[in-house]
Image 1 (cartoon, rainbow, N blue to C red):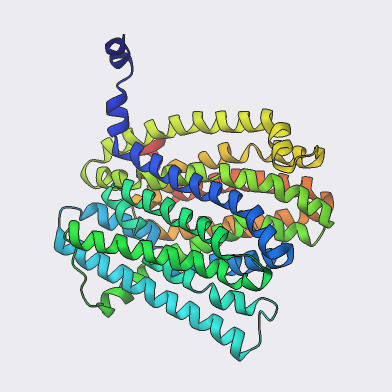
Image 2 (cartoon, rainbow, N blue to C red; image 1 turned 60 degrees about the vertical axis):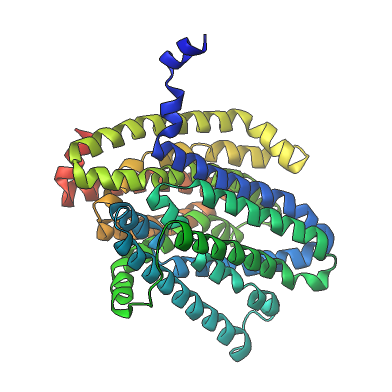
Length: 430
């Protein structure tokens, strides 16, 4: 019986596929992060109170924004370089040394800005201490070698290490965080444990994979920063487009509406990670195929695209049907307004999947200028249209604006590819 099943479904080959493995391990990382976050929320609220919990999250939101500066597009550019040089240990050593040096330099600059803001300008007065203690998260991000293992298509170790650090953080909350005065240690502990685990991963890269760490080559670092500046601004625009809806709604609606929408948005933002993880998972293999044989690259990308669209449609449909149950489980009450928001936004994961082909083509062919244009055109459209619709229709208008943004960015990328790289456009869509 098993032999017949193996003939019908070559499961072993499916699991051994590097892109599938990358996606599964990235999914494991993201799902574990979400799960730990959900578990830690009631523990923290019980320990430090709602007020301090809000300040801890506010400080964390500042750090998340600064992490875009620390990453500076290396999460998109570096995996490609690692994938293309995976057989050359000397080239890999230089890439690794320069990327980590650049990220630590950027983390130091971001930390200096915060320190000047807190102690020199008196900013962040309500949560300045918590924010200063959160700065270790910037260096944890700088030391994270996810991009290296992604490029090497060896995601198992880094995914396990990520879960291990999050479990240590959860244990630390239970053991050491007991009253509101200890709130400053929450983000510090997360950063300290993350940095420690990431440094162990760097030791593994050096000792077991034979990667040497050279002194920083400032000319190469400066060149990489210049090369990545468009990717940085693209990431910043995407962050504002995806996470700016709640801020816009806060100007036009009551706290109750804000809470209802926030609950639905949190569910959708988790589901929207699906297309982003697919791009990250296939990126290394796609880069190699694009360099070696464009025909195989387009065949590979078309196959992935059709499967992702089908999966996205199933996710969207399932979310729409399960919206009342999801909201009921998360809120422990019947919140019809929140259910309405979630049902409207359930289309977002599928619509985001539409653009996977365009984004992958732009990344593997190093079309950073097109990606930059598309990201900022999307950002400008999203901020303008959602602000207008939200002012007129409240949360419903915001949902319509976000849905239309996903459609518009797909059309923008389509037009840009057709106009500037027609051969790639026809290669994929013909």
